[in-house]
Image 1 (cartoon, helix red, strand yellow):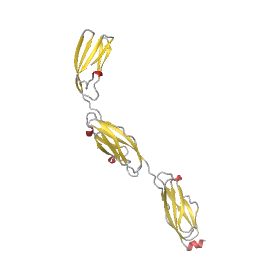
Image 2 (cartoon, one colour):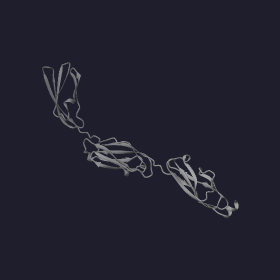
Image 3 (spheres, rainbow, N blue to C red):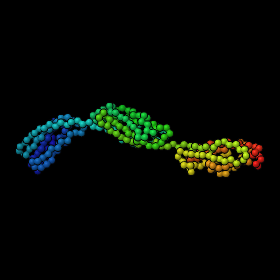
Image 4 (cartoon, helix red, strand yellow):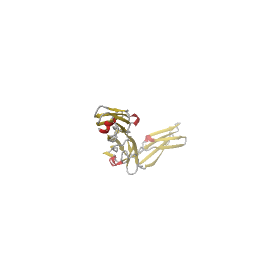
Length: 274
C-alpha cells in the first residue's frame, strides 16, 4: 500500500493486484488541490494485467475506485558484453575470446551469433569461428598468412526479431624477416683483373639507407681488394688467377641476409695485363 497527501487535505492509498507487474512503490501522485495526476511505472521487462485500487480520503470520507492496467509485451534486443581490442603477431592465431550474450524473452541457447571482418584481406570471414553454448560464447580468428595490419571484427547477436552489434579491433603485428640480398650474376674475367659488383638488398621493415651491407671473401686467394666493401655497387681487384667466392651481407639491426657470387679469373689474358 502506498499513501500520499498534500497540506493534509487528502490522503491517497493504492493497492495492486499484481505487485510483480506494478509495484505500489512505483505509483506516484502529483498536483495540488483538486487537480491531481497519477503516474504508474510497470516493472522492467514485465507484461500482463493488474488491477489498481485507488482510495482517497479527506479525513472523514473515503472514496475508492479501481481501474485495470494492461502492459503489452515488447521484444527487447539481445545483449552482448564488451570485447576488448586484440593484438597478435603476424602468423599467429587469435586465441578464444570469451563474451557473454543474453536476452529477456529468448533463451541464450537459442540466440543467433555471427561475426564479420571489415578487412577480409587480413582476416577472412570464413576464418572467424564462434563456439560455446548458452550465455557464454567464444570467438577465434586466423589472419591471412604473411599479412599485417588492422581490422574491426563485428559480432552480432539476434533473437530473430532484433539484434545487437558489438565491434572490437584486431591488430596483426609484423614479424621481421631477414633482408633479401642479391649479389649479382657470376662472372669470368678474360681481359681485366677488376670486376664490377652490382648487388641489391631490400628489407620488409628497414629502409635501404639504414641497412648495413658488406662484401667479404668466402674462398679464394687473400689478394682481393674491394674499392668500398660497404657499398652495394663497387669494384673488386684481383692480383692472382683462380676462382673466388664473394659474399654480400645485409643487416637490418636484428637479422641478416646474404648471397654469394663466384668470380673466375682466367690465366693468359690476366697474366698479360700484369
